[in-house]
Amino acid sequence: MASTTSGDVLPTGGGIFTSIPDLFFIPEFVFGGLVWILVASTRVNPDHPLGWVMFVSVFCFVFTTLWFFLFLCGANQSSIWPALDTFYHFLAVVFYLSASVILAYITVLKGWGLTVSSGGTPSIVVLIGEGLKIYRLDIAAVVMSHVATLLYFLHAIFSAIRWKRA
Image (cartoon, rainbow, N blue to C red; front, top):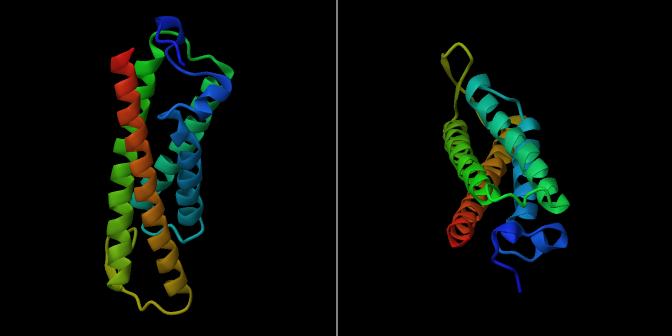
């Protein structure tokens, strides 16, 4: 049974694999990493919106890894950590939601056969061969991005409940 004293609010070590908000760390790694891999494996066109998607996926992957190791090592025992945990995961939700919407919009345009170049001029593209493969990778990235958003959202909600309970 976990203690509810202020010195032992968050789990450490192997305890993070048994507490409900912290169980989401591993799926967040997996799905966030898949978004990063899938977007990076396609042509990043248009540059600016997909650059934001790449930033979000890399930032959240690296920061979640850091956060995971801080929890694993037990450096999270100050009374401020439950609030920081909640804040970080809500920030990740906002980031991933914005990236997911952008990625879905660009993928829908590709499905319609439209692309927007860096100069802002639209062009029509037929999805055959390599274009179809990239389109399918983009669809997979959209799905993984929305799943990552959901995981970060659930983690944020359960972290907020834990924070208010402490």
